[in-house]
Structure formats: C-alpha cells, structure tokens
Image (cartoon, rainbow, N blue to C red; front, side, top):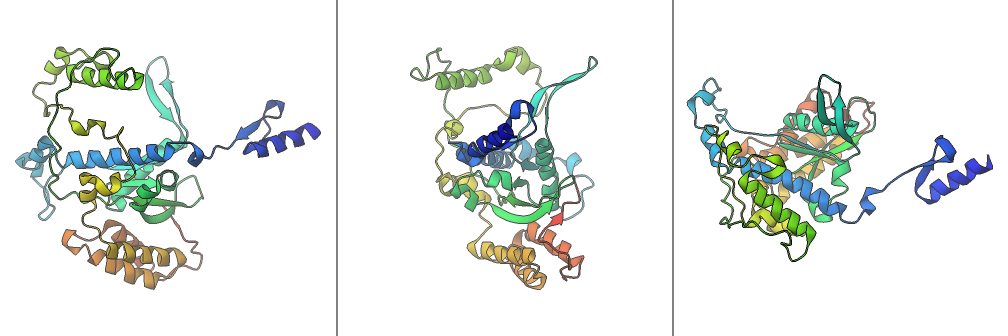
Length: 336
C-alpha cells in the first residue's frame, strides 16, 4: 500500500496518473500545449489544407473540367455546374502506424479512434456547407493569431462518446478567381552539402530535386512520367512560395493573399452576429439565436447565405425554435 501511494504521488508530481500497470507504473499525461513549436505545427496543418483548397480553385485543369459538357450533363439548373471540390477534417490525437492485414493482403494504415474522428469531421463538413472542419483538440494547439481566424460553429457529441466537443471552421469562399502564384524559379540538383551544411536543408533540396525528375521514393524518372501520358495533368513546378512553411510567422494570417481571399466574404459585423447567435444557441435562448443567425446569414445573401447558420437554423426549426428542457448546450452529430 505504501509503495502504491508513493507511486501515486510520483505520478501526480510528473503530471501523470498511477494505474494498475506492473511495478506500480504510471500513465503520463502530456500537455501538448507545452511542447515548443507545436502551435506553429498546428497552424501549418490548417494552412496546408487551406492552400489545397485555393489550388483546386486556381489549377487550370480543374477549372477546365467545369466547362466539359459530359460532366455538366444532368446537373440541375442553378447548381453552378460541375466543380472540383474536396472536404477536409482536422483532428489531433495518437495513432498507431504500421502494416496491418494477413498473409493474403497487407496495407500500411493507421489505427486509432482519432483517425476516425478526423474522417467524421471531413464527412460532417458537408452538413455545415463548409469544406473544412477542425476539432477543439487542434484549435487549442494553434497560435493565438490562428485561433482568432477560426469560427466555432457547433458543439457536438459523436458516436461512441458522450463528451461534448466544440468544432470550428475557417471560412472559405471558393467561387472566386485566385491570383496566380509568383513567378516559378529554377531548381538545381544540389550536392549533398547543399544548404550551407544544414542537414535539414540538404535533405529538403534533394527531395525537391527528386520530385522534379520523378525519382523520389524509388520512382522511375522519365519512364514514370511517360506512363502518365494522356491523363489530365499540369506541369509540376516549384516556385518562390515553396519555402513558405519554413518562413512561417504568425502574421501570415494577416499577410498571405490566399488566406485573406478565402475570408473576403466575412466581415466583423458577420462575426459579431454569428458569435451572438452561437452563444444564445448554447445557452438555450433559441429565439435570440434565431434572430442573430438569420441576421448573419442575410449578410452573405449574395453567395447563398452561410452554411453553419443555415444548418443550426434547420436544427432549431425541427424543434420549432423551442429549446428542449433537457438541452445541455450540445447535440449529437447524427451522421458519421
């Protein structure tokens, strides 16, 4: 008993929890927010998704597909025609990576409930009319500058858990012409000591050069490129923006043209009205919430309204805008 108590005290001192593991071991609790640089990594994860959304709407091949008659055939009038679109879910948590399967088939995959959570967020993004959702686990890791640009749009529970979880989005207006990136620059094959003796820079330079000749990860160079003939593609080029990740600073949220253009349809008045509606929604004042959400979505009438506003208005409408007596400030996310 004395040894168990000592183990418990030790676990508590080390920010851990004593358990029933062998030799009175303890399970450490790691506060990810205390890990240096993780806030920047979380910001970069979100920015990576946002850059993909921009490139989908800037890529000539993707844009040309929207004009192909066979892809637009049968689409309802007023739908805007065929568009290349992707959904994204961002979550943070542990995962086991490895080869999983049997002697008949083996796949390299990830096993974790957190992997499923990211997939749920991607699927749920369609319900809210937004291309991207991120969980609070990611949001709380981000820099203050990054968090301020994200919008809390609901509090939900998911299948298999009763723990309420706030979810967020970064407003993305895709129906616009995004300016072209800066002029491409030539990439040279550098020697092994490229980057002034910096191993990280040398490895990055080697990988970029390999991407250019198709040899990365055992690629076959020209032969691999020939095998892609006839497929829709665009020339791969590395431009001055390639090093944006290494040059990251928190003020990127206020200076990057792509990030600013994605949120160009959002105003301070909209943000204020939506926050008012969200607070009233959680607190159970659904009449006030209805008024605020209707006011907010009306500010985006020229683009068809706001997806999260319409989703929450639809949910409250199912209850005739009368908050249930057992309302606890969150709802189940019914679709996976």
